[in-house]
Image (cartoon, rainbow, N blue to C red; front, side):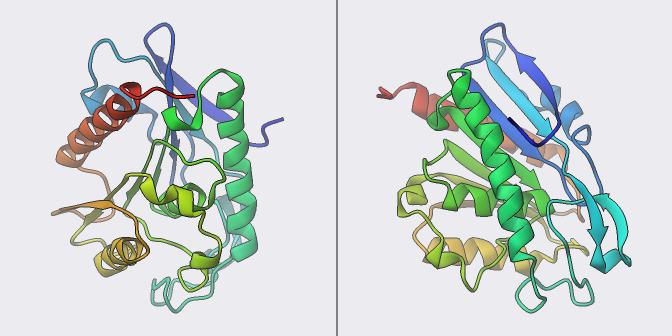
Length: 233
């Protein structure tokens, strides 16, 4: 049973790949659903897009206000994931729920090699954590305006088999929420850990711009074409 509720959009009549797109703090699964037509994907694309709704919970950094969140944030005084405490237990619970969605797609006949995980902000953090610790590697990971959580202990949880997973990271140079240096620092750390990260930066704040949307669409097409050309046992 899947614990997360979600929205979905299907391109084509017989999806042979899945993109799971995770929203940011305080948003919901409807947030990125309208972006699908803007990706510029080929007309013959057969992809199922899934947009999960994060559970609601009190968020410490917002005075305990209850809102959709993938995990608790204890402080945004510095907005620095390298110094602020992090909700390790909450991150791992959400990772488990995201993996339930992946298992649901497996049951529909979509192997992990045909599943892409994308996230924005807090959803980007969950994308990176889930994608590099999962037992069976995914086709690709895209982290938008986010960062790698639990960076000081993440190495012990990494599945070495995921180091071949392509990672797309993008960030706004003027981001006041998740600062540029935190996103870039996470990309650098992932490279040091043996991952191949494609880095993109844009003149924007904490958002997604049209050039970035086009780059994401091209990356999705390229990533799935790579795996479509391989024989999957």
